[in-house]
Picture 1 (cartoon, rainbow, N blue to C red):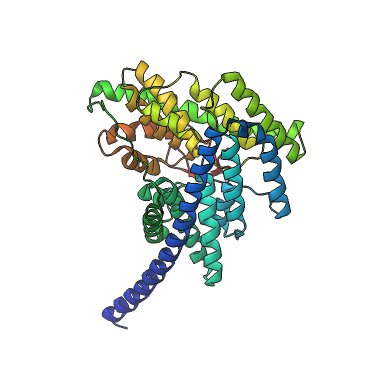
Picture 2: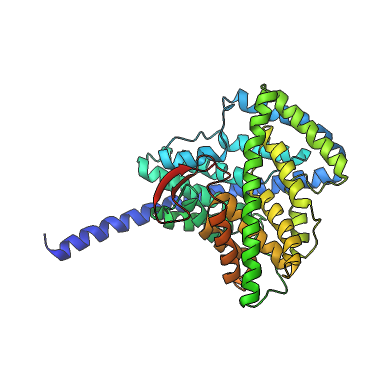
Length: 418
């Protein structure tokens, strides 16, 4: 066979593979985009009702029992949440389609009654479950199923946050730190873009913030950002440790899952009454917006960590990323101001740097800074993120995440985040 014939054969194979991936990406992007938009509206309605009907907070123990009961009836009482999505990609474990409606309903119940949780965990599970089912229905092989699952993850993230580039890279980067699944690049990008467009057509929103007083790149700003990056790494470690330790404490003293959920709900109610504000219930996007405008309570980040750990550790559903944004924004707002940075810019640095520290995804974090805040000051974001990534060690939100290369030197380590 001549060189030209070999080249034609390879090109033909790659072309048909591209067409296949484009088709699957369009199907998944549309499907997950529709579900993501519906999920977005459901969360918004739940949040509005919670703010209008303050008595819903006192239903939180009942909602927790309902969530645990619902998962038990559906045979999903040992559900591992986002961790199972990571395993599904790395080891090709099949995800059940019933994961999608379960996490949808459970997350809405959590937000409706005042649990402190986010949306991205649900988005990743929704996307992974739907795309996995589509892949099996189309009888894809094992490798293509993994690619399609990542496409669904990217689509779900993008549909909720409106950040398609971040979503695509995050889906490829989060599973095995140090190894990017580049074979999923086309479907992840296309699926994320289509899901965002579909969600926008259905009333979804693109998350973007306008900042003022972004410092110039100079020795003074570099030093301040370096210090903030070191501190953000410490907060990321604390966030992960508290959120991993709390379920262990629950399991030790409250072995029955329904009892854990009920008691967790009661603790959140008590804490809410104690602090005298509802700022720490739900996702807290309004607090994030205020922090980016330069307004934050000095201890808000600590309370959000506590509320989130108690909520998710008890068995309520949702995700940790928006609470991480809350933690980073309020911490960065306060500490950035003390360091001589503008409070709003400090909040933005804190959001992205602590996101990196808890997910171990530096490239996604830099892209997140670009998509959320624009390109101005991007080098400073990257510096803060890099320091947070390095100094946060091998902690992470997802225990099934594998860290394949050392953060300190170019050597293979292959260990799970803890």
